[in-house]
Image 1 (tube, one colour):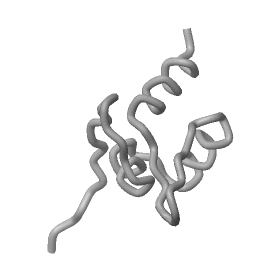
Image 2 (tube, helix red, strand yellow):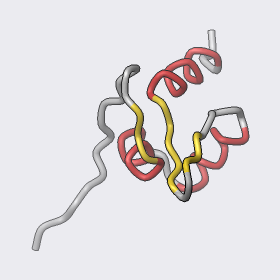
Image 3 (cartoon, helix red, strand yellow):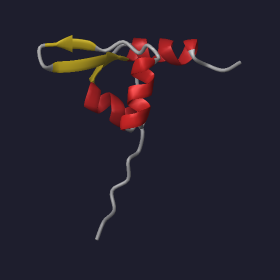
Image 4 (cartoon, one colour):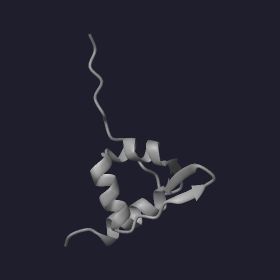
Length: 67
């Protein structure tokens, strides 16, 4: 029997991701994703699809970095 593990991936500034792909790459579960949305991460909705821009995620991380 094989076990699947969730491995976070790379998020590039110049790409856009569906919310599902973004969450997989960022390694965010339901609670963490809701928290970053509440904290201001921009989600782009086109029809029934929702997207996150890599640029927006990297800016969000930079803005919320602890110094």
